[in-house]
Length: 234
Image (cartoon, rainbow, N blue to C red; front, side):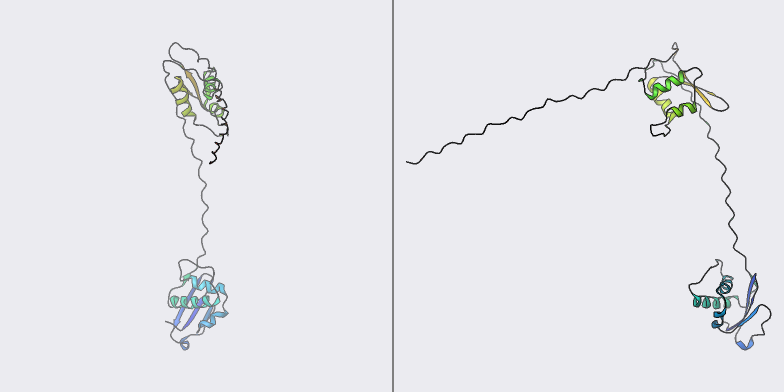
């Protein structure tokens, strides 16, 4: 371990040459500093100590806990640098900005083609299925976007339109569907069984059954029992 150092500091590099004794130190030249004791580092700015220390580390530091720790760590770093080739100080490269993600390609609309059954079932008037039947049976059919806008929930959330069409409309009420693709949308129309040219009339909703009120039963109040008189002793 060296006891004296000749340190050369430039803007881009730090070098240190170690000597066993202070007597071996040559006269320092330009940008050179002769050190014979860690105490001499107390006069150095903390930024310079960090510069020297970082030349021996892969991960640079930005501060020390205190000045004494900085002096001890820098003196140890000089022993590492002693006799080594100049270590260039490269500024921390700025992180390259992340490239903006390209917008996701729109998912292709799956064509809905469903064959009708043989016996249609009427939908409840005022229900969502009846509304779909009215839209799909209109002349020219209905666009996918119009059907989606008409079937949002009461909270404004979109429903599974494809599921509604397949299950509630086609499976439960036996209608079929045909699809026509355009440049901007998809148009759907009802398909009827052979011999049927129009949808069934919607059925009226079943009125709710009024609750059956049970007759109020009055509680039976029993008459108080008469106490039997005890016979007097003769």
